[in-house]
Image (cartoon, rainbow, N blue to C red; front, side):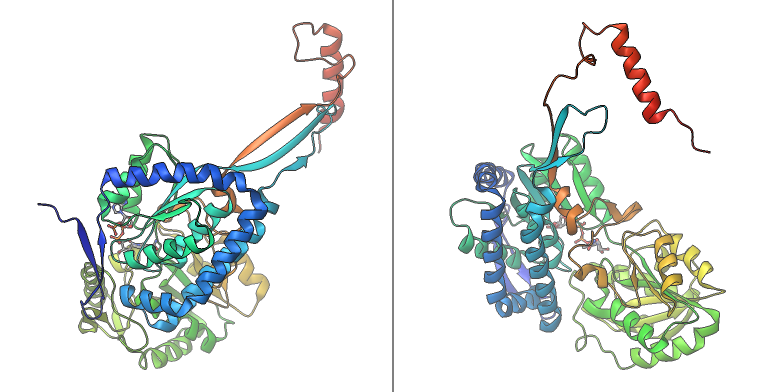
Amino acid sequence: MTTLTFDSLNPATGAVVGSHPKATPAAVHEAVGRAETAAAWWTALGHAERRRRLLDYKAVLTQHIRELAALVHEENGKPVGDATLELVLAVTHLDWAARNAAKVLGRRRVNTGMIGLNLAATLEYLPLGVVGVIGPWNYPVFTPMGSIAYALAAGNAVVFKPSELTPGIGVRLAELFRESVPEHDVFQTVTGLGETGAALAGDPRVKKVAFTGSTATAKRVMAACAENLTPIVAECGGKDAFIVDADADLAAAADACLWGAMSNAGQTCVGVERVYVVDAVYDGFMRELTGRAARLKAGEDYGPITMPGQVDVIKRHIDDAVKAGRTVTGGSDAVRAPYVDPVIVEDVPEDSPAVREETFGPTITVRRTRDAQEALELANASAYGLGGTIFSRNARRATELARLMRSGMTAINSVISFAGVPSLPFGGVGDSGFGRIHGADGLREFARPKAISRQRFAMPGMNITSFNRGPAELERLVRLVTFLHGRRKR
Ligand code: NDP
């Protein structure tokens, strides 16, 4: 007999945090049906009322910040402080999405150009209908909210399938939404395992799927979506590089590097995984880094590994790196499940799993490079391309390097700072996925452009879209286009 519920466990203690239904495909389809009805109502409310409701929801979440942080701590394992930080970021994004949706998506006139002189044209971005959000466990509030808030602000209804490791927080986010929007099921959470997510992705009434997780599962979700031509936005993690240039503030760089790599036990899609340091400052940087790393402890400064199976991946990467490189901090015995102490290994070959594959643990590889150019080339030689970091006191040079980094986002002299700027789009290239959440691009991701052209008056002697068009009209058109576009620029 198949069980009808599943438990979410505290990854530190194994204690049951909560029990949740395994939503069957039929239950998912019912939720999508309710969402369709809700979407029509929510869309009709218009931007101003939606903004009011979403800002109210923001206030409700903020008022429950301690309760929610405690729940994230229990289900995911991260310290309450980090959980609180995650909630603050999520609320910031919700606020931005609510306040900016009308401006970004609302109807506006656009220029029609000389040939369209007799036309008026408007552009607006309309909601898609029902958006399915499939979320991860590493940032169970911040990450899905990057899709949920923007999809709701764009006028869609949302059906959210949280990770089976963090269902409770997903349920609570939707429950609290009802305080601000009690009339219809505009935001619902369906709990369950992979099958539940697959049912959501495969429902033809879901008009877009926002997925965060592994590249392999993204491909499966995309294949399910292909059946119905359902578009997806995919955020699939990364192997982010951290570059330290010769003129960097080494203490600040080491501090940021360590936090970027080890906070949340390294389970951060834009976490630091590969470090490239130019020769001139290598020894100084390593002194700063290892001194700080020696004081860090799993279970105190950061939590356990949330997904038990991930410990094996982390251990495989560490064992391989330790064998092939030079261990500076930690080593194979750093793994004492569910905790992993910090591991830093130098000179690990660039083709080894610890450098190529996403580790998602509190580990980094460090390599000495000739200069920043070589560091950039190594950073870019990855199948992934999500985020990245550059430390340099030369703002111009750092910006140049950032622009050349093959990634969706790059932070300079700070780590992951782009995630807290709601107006910046978030997403990657290559195996890191495609599409964007956050910012104006994130709002447009959950909307479809609607273009309207209206003829204001008939253009005398220029009725070109008619079978009555004569050679004289064509001649006038050729003369006009030659005047407008026929001059070469040398
Ligand atoms: P998955 O990619 O397997 O899961 C991500 C989400 O997709 C979960 O909600 C999961 O549900 C759901 N899901 C699983 N199978 C299907 C399916 N066939 N159709 C629809 N939805 C599905 O990631 P894991 O949690 O297993 O983590 C594996 C690796 O992914 C990690 O080691 C890490 O490297 C990477 N990862 C990256 C993240 C990021 O932020 N980009 C976040 C999390 C993981 P359920 O949990 O119920 O299986």
